[in-house]
Length: 562
Image 1: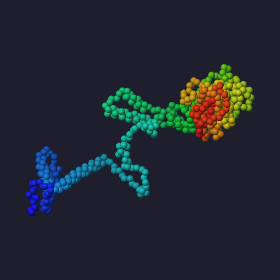
Image 2 (image 1 turned 60 degrees about the horizontal axis):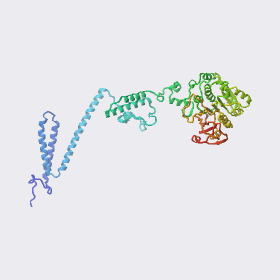
Image 3 (image 1 turned 120 degrees about the vertical axis):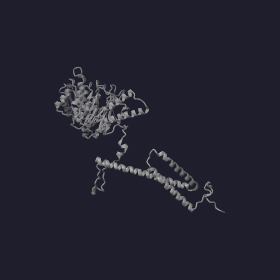
Image 4 (image 1 turned 45 degrees about the vertical axis):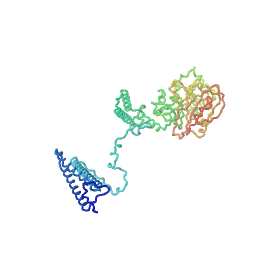
């Protein structure tokens, strides 16, 4: 059977079941035609690229259209003849893409070369210096270097490092440490203004007059400085009192080793001029040769002038006597002068000391400070006639300085009364307790009036015009025996309907003494219907004290801990 010739069926579509067979000569001829066609297309593309654009372009579109028509016709014919047309089309597309990439690469290379030429011209005429490479010594070549070169700084090219987000801190006081608080306030106000303006612009809302007024107030407040914002430019000793900041007060307390424990504490005084003492007392202080106050005086005198109860612990010779005598004399000057009408009611203040020598020393200091005030001072100590001491008390005096035992004897024998005494000082309290004077101290406190107790709430404001009982306790040491005694107290049992607290609202501590033990003193309102019977009771905490059946007239020492 004769095989059909493929050229006879050229005009007909080949059947899908019978593929067209091409001989070797035909395939070679087909390849030559394709190569010639490809060369012709490349030549046409080069001619089109080299031909300048002009108004004659529309007229040249006809040959392109004809060539495109011929190519499409040839492509259709080849597609009908060649079963591998898809592979050839893909190869042709890859070649076109490669040539297009090559042209793009050449254009970019030419652009870079042109930019390099321009940079060279700028460098020549502007006089830019080429950065010299740092010469590394042979000994330092392999040594690890902690320094960064400027070229290695990646923060310059990062927008996050160039434009920091100035968000307000949401913890603490909302400020960064080490940066001026005033500048931070101004920056925060400016950022808030910009954010609000952007939101209004986005929403299409106009700013109201009241909002503008509030924003102006914030900006004005940001321009002002408060006590925390004042710049640290001078030492606290060179500043006035109103210029002192919180930081200055903290440094001041650290310089003089002053420690506080309590609420609503006044500022310590830096010198005698800022002490708010009367001119007579300041004149007496100058006459006594006190150039500057000691740390215990700096802290205790402002507390005493506010009728605050104080417990001070400081070493011997630190000026504790003047720390309680000066506030006591200021308190007495506010009271009516002693005359025949009120001298029978007893003294205004009582100072108790453990020994007669210490009591006489305190008497000398008190007389020296009361020189310009006309205040009478009487000492009641053992070893002297109690009748003579009782006679001095009946003649009237403002201050009584005594030992606990002799003062209690005078009270029991009716040589003395404490009906108008609301100021009590316990000097060397640790020695008094150690020497067994605790019952006598409790008896003396029980004889004092109980109608002027401080309010139960420690944070409550005190009436400046009213007189409250004020308790001062000073100690130089706190041995373990006294510490154990301070953990318990002697209470008198009896019916009690009302109990008012005399809380020690301020505790002073001098680290120089090396004894950081602190105690707290409480007193209870006395009642005439009380039956006295001694009983020891241990109270662990303030909450425990509040729920105990406490008897009137009790003197309680609660140890706060080391």
